[in-house]
Length: 390
Image (cartoon, rainbow, N blue to C red):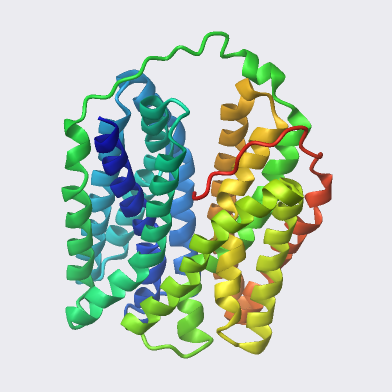
């Protein structure tokens, strides 16, 4: 049973996190071949993250009502496949409404995996699956890193047929969703006195972490959703598999960065590493903007995409144990996901006024504010072990 659960959740993690980078990769195609503006791309990014945030309570409701996390998780992966297939059709007929529909479905789909996969693993291993969590997290990191290259490798192999590219990736997602449906894993809600979490959650701590995460995400997602377009417009890349390989290299830096920052946070503290990772992301990106030297982007990827498990671990360190679910939901749902909805829109809108480079410089201010606000976070009274991968 444990092996089956680990396999299905890990494959789903690979696909879910990989698919989240299909859209930013395809945004470059839309700008180059469909004539989309940067503002329209920003709107698509905002729709994706907004729907993800709005769908989270609905996903939790499904999980609570059915008590079957793996089946609900597979529904999310199936929706991912459906969203990408519809995207392929929208690209084929060059229809903006259909493309928007695909982004809406994909945004909803992205809300499923992380809470449900985590529930399935927690139910199966009951706190004793450190290695399993590491394997599962590594698959998510691998998916994020590899999918841009996979997407553009298929694009080249299919002689520029992005429509068929999306359909193939969508079908693969659906195929790998079905194994989860065959595993019988159920849970019951035993959270007695659940309302106490609302009373015990430190409002100041959660508020400051949410604001810091919001500003950080406005910056990082404002950049990330335009990463393909940055390489196309600022560095003159061609839209082919080499572009995908470069993006993969930028994202793969976090595979090393996550365990390294986790290890260093055990020595130096979560709060310090939170500030260092955000400050490092801002500085490395500004150096890229001013020098146009590709060397700085993997460093940006190292600091940016290594931070996710650190943020949630810091939250868990600062609130009572029975409040971590609520606190993480606020920090992640409002802070991280909310920032993801705002950042692309800011970059898209400002790029029409100041150009892409100017818009990116302005959105970097939010990252700088996030780093400068780090000292406002109280020193954690206790330390939990940072998950190696997010």
